[in-house]
Image 1 (cartoon, rainbow, N blue to C red):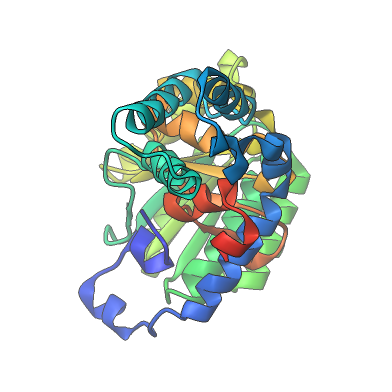
Image 2 (cartoon, one colour):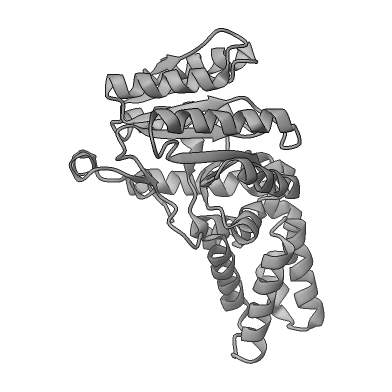
Length: 335
């Protein structure tokens, strides 16, 4: 899975070769922030996932571990498999050292969160069209703004944004502010305009101007609002009519604080639009960070991006190994 932006995004060889080498110090700073901002999930797990859990290996140990992972919203399926494998390795494989068991737990959590399919985003379509959807309040527009900023300033991509949330004036204004920060064009329509027409115009403008990426912001909607869900499907069909194969990426923002509700939202959105990746937001405010594992296991949709705060650098590619270590390991081990 992605550790750097160039691991997540596939660029043509010439553009990729021109980029500066990744800065290890920068990645180290992000891991530190990830760990700090996942504190609520760790605190919710309490002492259950610390090394002392494995001092005595009995039935109560595995029950406590199972309860802790369920409380963190890792999901029943993933939890049963992880605990079962760890217990088997402890009882029949001779894995009894507490530190080794904790390390193995982190490995199993990372394995469960790791997607079974390619989780990159190909930016070689000229332009690549990314449609972003989700319910209200999940950080959709903010994530788009941060993503546009990264694509422009760190990866040298020309980006066009499409403000297809035409029912909420504040959403258009918010996207325009982000567009100004990133120095990218924002295609808008009048309030109440058909969202599909704005998306169409954004893709048309992207092709005309030689953009590398077009990101379409859609209106927030509940997965139970059938007319609005059908509207989302219409946006996708209109974009595809203009540019066959587009949208090339459909990202769904999921608020980590909603836990299992977020899992249900992802399942319902996938019925209307082929969601190719999850942007898991607000991990810094959630005690249910394990939802990243449940999404990967129950839905098979890769978590591609995570948001752990308000700063620009707090939107990053999801790395299951870093995630697992930030979730369970004590500070002196994880550092």
